[in-house]
Amino acid sequence: MGKLDGKVAIVTGAAMGMGAADAAILASEGATVIVADVSENEGRAVAESIGGHFRHLDVTDENNWRELVADVVSTLGNIDILINNAGVVGFTPVATTELAEWNRVIGINLTGVFLGIRSVAESMKAAGGGVIVNLSSTAGMMGYSNLSAYVASKWGVRGLTKAAALDLGRDNIRVVSVHPGGIRTPMTAGIEGDAMYRSQPIPRIGEPDEVAKLILYLVADATYSTGTEFIADGGATVGQVLNV
Ligand SMILES: NC(=O)c1ccc[n+]([C@@H]2O[C@H](COP(=O)([O-])OP(=O)(O)OC[C@H]3O[C@@H](n4cnc5c(N)ncnc54)[C@H](O)[C@@H]3O)[C@@H](O)[C@H]2O)c1
Image (cartoon, rainbow, N blue to C red; front, side, top):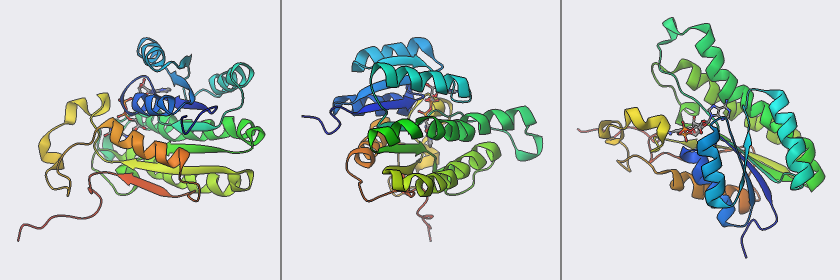
């Protein structure tokens, strides 16, 4: 018997990286998982490998969200779990960031999370409750150079999580944010240098399943937690090691 038998879960950005690991761990505990992504080939392959369902979803498109939720509710039943994982990064200094780039990052990373929460709320209420996990970052706990839009989007996700938890708590819907540090995924493929992680208490990059296991705990067992932050960053935000 799985911890999530009979549950219906949507994971956005699940075609690769952390989303794929999240989809796999939820499916392994018995959930029916919808792999929702703009990357069709990779998404279909993930869905097939975990016995789930692929659906095309651009998280910035409210019509896509409306169609996805209507389709899932009519074919699989009400939605119990939403992992708002889809995200993008862009490296530019704040003084030269184009408005279009700012809007792209905020649109996917923050507005996409808002649309996801709004889209599943009624179905979760009908199910008697649910859990929403929003992927923020250590960039939602502190700042990074050359990442202003990304940092703003991830602090936005952290705040939105708290507001949504307050609005939805009485409907038995928990909303939490997860803050990974550097994790080995396609997003970090170009920036995997050891040097970045050397000063952490755990001096290495993280693996997607190390975040997925935390997310499974939050979904299945963290029944008294809502509106708050869960960090998996090798201790990156704890402080600095001083070589004195
Ligand atoms: N990798 C890290 O080190 C790291 C650290 C902290 C937080 N995060 C966050 O974790 C989440 C997952 O990161 P990852 O490293 O697995 O990323 P990734 O780049 O490996 O995968 C992101 C997925 O999101 C999908 N996607 C992009 N735009 C989309 C859209 N508009 N609609 C639907 N899907 C879309 C992509 O197709 C892809 O499948 C992101 O929100 C990211 O910001 C990542």
